[in-house]
Length: 130
Image 1: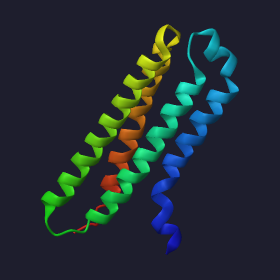
Image 2 (image 1 turned 60 degrees about the horizontal axis):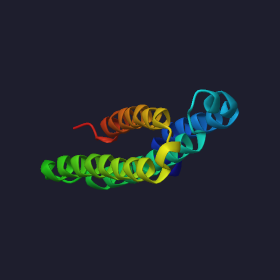
Image 3 (image 1 turned 45 degrees about the vertical axis):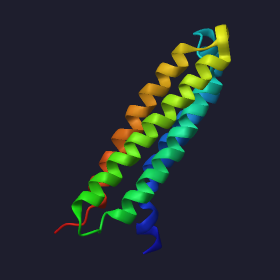
């Protein structure tokens, strides 16, 4: 029973480990292409944490008989993730100055799409069949 409750986290953990492994293993190629690998790792970590928290709250709301609570929870979680990552990107771009890696920010945007797709897919599986 405990294994069934945590199975939803496996895809997030897999993507996190995969991206982290590639970022570290391909560090030289990333730097050669003007991609700051630390920024990619930071974006990956933020997305991983935001996604886990978002799915956790969706799991809490999924059995609520009021469907608007579920929809509001999903929308609020997606909005907060988007705003949090936008703020992190803005802070990075301003703080890094001329040494900023715009390509790393674009990779972070791609990772946002991957993690959001995973969230939607897992959310649809969490819904009990009625």
